[in-house]
Image (tube, rainbow over all chains, first blue to last red; front, side):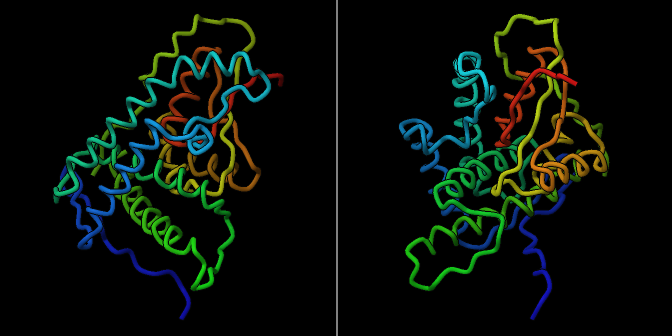
Length: 159
Length: 98
């Protein structure tokens, strides 16, 4: 069999400023657990684990980059924690507003960035052996990718 | 379904004083994690680009490794970089030597 799989229709335009949500059973708890792990990583994680969330702004100027990081780090952290709160507060909802959808997208993408960096994912399709110990993590990464992709498609309709 | 394009209003205060000299450019770099559709969406959301322009920039990032997505004063560039980082994109800034 070849060709693209059809969308799972996890999300749909609900109204002028709302998105309907239809996650398979158990996915809400998985997202809740993963987002809580992200929260912990943001608060007490190692710097290297979060390097994709705090990239370099001035690659050729360490002094200005340090100043930039000092100025924006705490604001980015607070925004990310707020997005996690919004996601967790709305996981049981069947309809979310646009601002909440943006919080879902931010949080899910941040989970992908941290996990993807840890797995050293590449753009090439890779086939894992069944007994590869990273297979479960890759599965989760794939699930997050699916959710973000479908939400992005629907959210774009509101631009 | 339609609504006004969201145009970027800075929501991150970098606390940087205005630098009115050499203009700066903001680049977004390719990475294997961010989805092409998501990158396109971010360009539309943050900069008010049309779907076509945002897609063009995304393809430049994907195929050429990077693309210039905005320009301006150092302060504006820092705000744009911070907003791109907020959305998980790998963005840097440098003086425009062109």
